[in-house]
Image 1: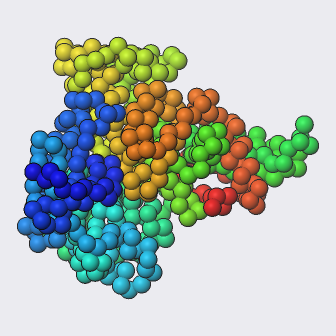
Image 2: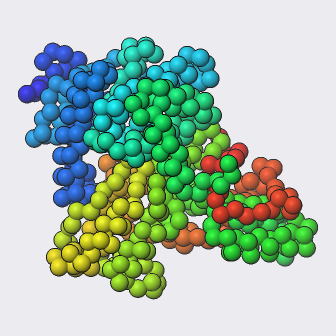
Image 3: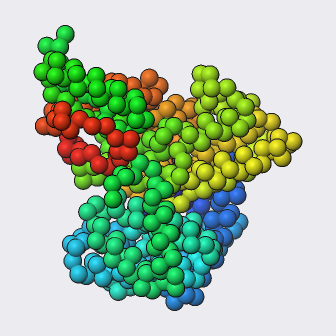
Length: 219
Length: 267
């Protein structure tokens, strides 16, 4: 299909390699899930197939909810390749490293990220790997939030799955951006404001947190 | 002998209350008897520092897997920060309980017996594979095996179950380690903790790390499992950087998270 097109490796995630390329003369990236040699072949085939499918489907669903995420050009199941729009911009992780994480602007960004996640959850999509590396800013504009990397996403209506999604994000957020508790609490505020069931999810989040291991029993 | 010592290090936590307390009492007695400063050490930080010095590893992603812990750790801004961990039970705990379900002996250890029996298995059965970002969950997997064991026993031998369990569980651990490597942009891995002795886990991790062009540090089994040396060494690092624990504050705590320790001996 794209024979002869130059592909330049831009990152190697845990899921696969991401190359920059052209797709029908549009700027594109292709995410290729290659077989993981450490995994048992049966397990590997099952995981690779299900993640490629859920990523293709749920990016589309995310866009239908009115959120920004890369346009999917082609799901090539035969080669486990997903062709998507190339997004010019930076990750939220890169952005937060450059700005004061306690500034009003950063807190507002976190609030809007919380709202975006609530919209996603209200559409029954659980992202599965929410981190600041998996949310981008189109053209580095803080108003243009783009959700990416839906490889671990799935459909669910349960409170537990929503709460765990936020819990995973909280832990990745605080370890990646130390001393940014305020930023994450702003994110949760945004979530609760936007979500159809903000109270239910945040109560459940408290239960999930208490389940974590070796948490201090104080407070 | 005491005149050759600079300080007394003891494990402050995490761990089981009774053993922690007994050691703390001995440490307090010795430090007052010999008039030496006391240094309280975090058990997990002990594992990490011992691993780093034995393997000569500067800045690795650390997979800490044992009976009570399952954590993916990286250093950032004066702390060992936990990027991923189990959201319910620890991997070693799950393996031990699995061993009981399939009727394996505790001698010399359930994990070792699973590893040996798994070598004889080859029929793979799909088990719940639960990865949530950089976190994992094992409780559902254990419930699945407990509930399905009678059905599974008709089609799979105990060896097949051990084999499938190892393949599934270790794939989950390797996957979250790889995700942390990508997220933190780090290309070295160090495995510590008792489950780190498992050769299949080491082999799978090595394949993943080499695919990424990185380096897996091979840990000597003697220092992978709990040892006193690691507490002495981590305590020494703290002591040389001005940290001591006054006797009046020399408590122990069963819940002492890795990221609570100020790591001021690293850049």
